[in-house]
Length: 307
Ligand SMILES: *[C@@H]1O[C@H](CO)[C@@H](O)[C@H](O)[C@H]1NC(C)=O
Ligand SMILES: *[C@@H]1O[C@H](CO)[C@@H](O)[C@H](O)[C@H]1NC(C)=O
Ligand SMILES: *[C@@H]1O[C@H](CO)[C@@H](O)[C@H](O)[C@H]1NC(C)=O
Ligand SMILES: *[C@@H]1O[C@H](CO)[C@@H](O)[C@H](O)[C@H]1NC(C)=O
Ligand SMILES: *[C@@H]1O[C@H](CO)[C@@H](O)[C@H](O)[C@H]1NC(C)=O
Ligand SMILES: *[C@@H]1O[C@H](CO)[C@@H](O)[C@H](O)[C@H]1NC(C)=O
Ligand SMILES: *[C@@H]1O[C@H](CO)[C@@H](O)[C@H](O)[C@H]1NC(C)=O
Image (tube, rainbow, N blue to C red; front, side, top):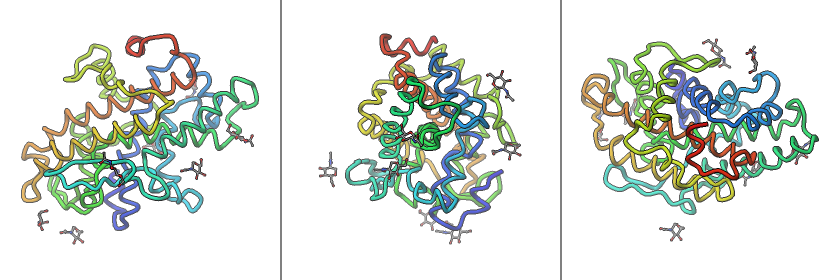
């Protein structure tokens, strides 16, 4: 189900597909487990009924939509092309790097603002049963972009986010972007077929358990050091910068196009990075949504971890 590879050929297409769609679904399912019941109930009212209240099920919508005529304008919202030169120099500057027409950072800010109004509409009773598409789209975009911004190659300009950096993985000729979208997550989970798009996979349940037990190199509460929806550009820029830094610290510093990345140690070394980035995305998304709803206004951010 490496659709990115099959359809690669257009920079725009390739760049827009961050984590494979099933990985996006799983990030959404992880986030659901951290939602306050009040948040869950409000989000269910915003989403179209076909998703049955699940942001996990709705998390991949944005990739398909970006490839329709109607949604083409949102293509470029899935990444930010940093003017970086990894592995030598990493740098991300929102003012300089966010393209005219938007990028993942501005899109998070824009859709968060729209979603905020939608939540008020649900509270006041003027929005029911997922009937306002502006609102449903805003929630689906926010959910999706929290995943995208955590994918290191979605915050790097070199070789168009790695799409033009040819590599070999498991004997297959591919490119670096696809390696981080899918090959490394599947290596991490030790699976050969895609994850479910309907319910959480055991591998991602394992990540949830590690978040709850504080078993990452960096403590989960630190992932939330910037998590205030009132300053979305500032927070999203910080997250994008973290992703960008991985392209110097690992993605391009350890890569070789002469050996097979599945067996030369590269994939194994990438697993903890992917696990960390996916976990950050899920916890940040849930925290953001809880805060937007006002469900944790009076609690310390660490509270969210034990909800
Ligand atoms: C829809 O969601 C409800 C509440 O979470 C659940 O009980 C039900 O099984 C779900 N239905 C489907 C078809 O997934
Ligand atoms: C970011 O880029 C803008 C526009 O190019 C520039 O004015 C600003 O000084 C840069 N900020 C930093 C911290 O480099
Ligand atoms: C914000 O998103 C809406 C669609 O929800 C779009 O029409 C508008 O152009 C976006 N604004 C910016 C500044 O990206
Ligand atoms: C949908 O919700 C948005 C955001 O609250 C609002 O501006 C818009 O008027 C609503 N559209 C309809 C048709 O109610
Ligand atoms: C990468 O691979 C593609 C498809 O196999 C090929 O068209 C392209 O020329 C290659 N690029 C480089 C830089 O080798
Ligand atoms: C969900 O996964 C099933 C089984 O892999 C697939 O047939 C279906 O097209 C997927 N649905 C979406 C919306 O991606
Ligand atoms: C390997 O990467 C180097 C540096 O990016 C590039 O110059 C070279 O053409 C690549 N070789 C192949 C076979 O793609």
